[in-house]
Length: 200
View (spheres, rainbow, N blue to C red):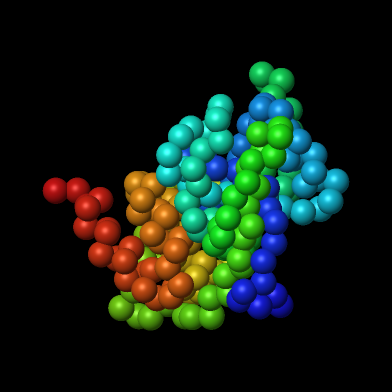
């Protein structure tokens, strides 16, 4: 496994959303710089970095990306009814952006440092309610996870990332949860957020 301080040069795709490890991302691609990115990743079997936009927009001039993002690997392609290329990507390792440059075609590239994987952790009994909430959210909103084995819900890493992507959180909150390095701390943060969504 690559060490904590190993680095790589990645094409970056700044978005108005946060991709978590193991998560699913669906995109429509039409700008030439991103079509080139998809071609490169498909040809090389490589991935691209997804970072939350801090300033700017998804289209037009390159946006300012958050410093921490997630590697995305393309797992499927399709052509939409509008004729645009659609891709489905899966979230992989997290990284920290150490520097960026813009290619002549407008594609944003980042020199990134890989983060270490989080250590496995079981969901403690005092946070077991989060498992039930995740199961309900998956049933209502996330068909891609309905066949997930029960062991996934016992994994604090998987549970925290799925709750973070399914709950109606703001971009800053989602980014903060992505940047946490302790899966139990992430679950505790999510537990403390939940009362906001309870009906009066």
